[in-house]
Length: 170
Image (cartoon, one colour):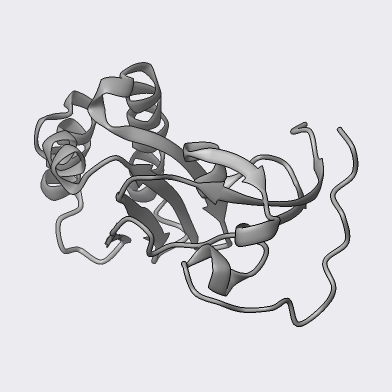
């Protein structure tokens, strides 16, 4: 189990980055033989990414619901993400297999969304959480001073609407 870090923290990065959300949706539950191979392709891709940090993948975390699974990923750049999509062994095989075996038959849906985040255009807060999300992909720092409010984290002015409790001594 991940260690909870008591207190308020934020993610800090000096660079632009990419948020990529990719997933699948089960459209026909009983067609397990159709959607299970699509589902099973993802772990191999994620392993490939974690084993090759030079590809530009920084971090990812999975989300599951009854019909859908997705992974939110953080990348150094769109160019690296696109390079992996077009050249990554595991991804290219999964993409070809999906098009050949599923195509447009409607049994399984796949989706992705890409967000290119310029430097200084993101903010986050993590209160009593394990190191997670963007903070795990970049730096996990206390949300104090210039990082105390969402406005301040975005380089604007803004006083806290509610007093912020002090972070516990580590």
